[in-house]
Image (cartoon, rainbow, N blue to C red; front, top):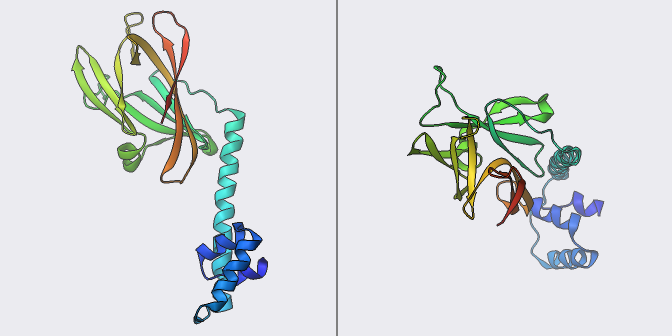
Length: 226
């Protein structure tokens, strides 16, 4: 197997030798022997290419294991006076928090009442602003004023679910709600379960919304299958 890896003709064949069964490997090499010979790549270049690929795979595996360890320990729950809700997903070792976005004069921004940012747990829990691409395609929100100091909010990654930012009659503070069967549910946490896919196109298995019934105070889990 090591000899096959050393003599690979590229990433595709290298991965084939790593994961294919012995029968398929034998058949592949037999078919390859019948094909017209190509100018062989210098052994030094093949070894260097293979080494770089293996190092990259090890780094990706190490990052995945670290993220799973963080998930197993359960990430701490973010807190803050302006915190509305937060989003976590596996196998990511970080959290996206969504907070009220105030202007310098202390008033809520009418165009962008909510701002999102990362909590980097592997970087001493530092806050880091979302990038432009993350705001536009992954973790950003779209806001629309709908009158009476209320806003319709939608996650750019799941626009079919409207959320509503408005003041509570109880404490006169802004909270974010979703509506379910005529009930107003206070949104506290979003968890996205990823299973399979790729880094750029992950396969989302389900989305969990951890909410509280504003009338009874009972916590409710609402699961959305995708």
